[in-house]
Length: 390
Image (cartoon, rainbow, N blue to C red; front, side, top):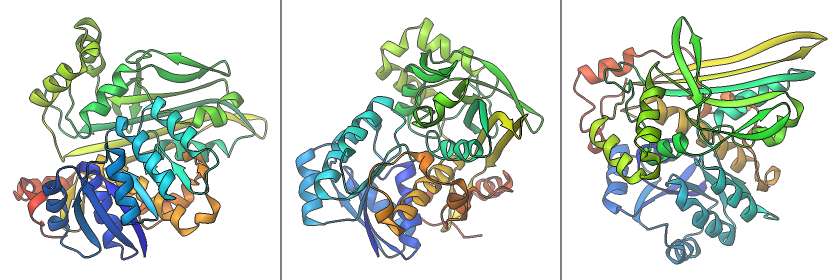
């Protein structure tokens, strides 16, 4: 039984804890500064191997004391990005493996520094982007003799957009604003460079549906450091429905709300609804030479909401939780193979997809599952009760 401490009982932490605990291979502690939130998650899952506790992980002393009293094999942070330095330092002192979902570039650099010389693994950026998209692109890269371009595109979108932004809040509002407002990394002419967020607007068509994509921060992860010098261009862009970028430029640039992110957060959370009826689009395109010929290969996938353990989970919850739990499972199954800073591209896509948690990335899902559960009225208060399993 692997012992893990999950910090944060929010949208993603709730599913991570359930997946691990219900696998039968993990003994899970779910901690949140709001103990009632953690308790409600435990009750909703209704299984064994999962316990709730109240813990403010932003306080180094409290976290370190807890890890001394209750040793674990791994710490998984589902907290906002700015909390992760403290968590990584506590994991280092406790000798526990460390995993997080951060997209923040500076936090990842701090984790890399903390990981230097460590005997345990430090694996940041285990989410969707960066995270799974980096693994998918790295797999395609291995198929080429020479690289020309690497494009990473990811979007978490409402299935039925009906507002001016053509968007619903499907994950952390703070993380969203961070991506839209911070400088972005890219590779141009073989050199690492910074580009502005909400720029580089392009049109992209997938399965006959038109979308837009534009620069956002953090999605490239460490892939540029690993493979960027071997290609002419490499970049990451977020996929949205056409028109979204223009509206966000108005809010963040013209109205200067990038300089007042607290106000922007309140505006978005007051006006833009959350939804469980979303779709996640993962698109990686690699161009280069194979046997002397110029070719392109793509990994394209759409993930839809799924009923897991009797509860409907959104596509962003499923894709994010499946990615990090698969990585955790691989590391804890072979701990001697991983130590110090571990980049996402060190994992093979084939291993992730074959993993018991990575199987949730299997293609073939549809929007009908979420539609049926919503119509049946089973989603409104499901955090406090289980819906009928399919």
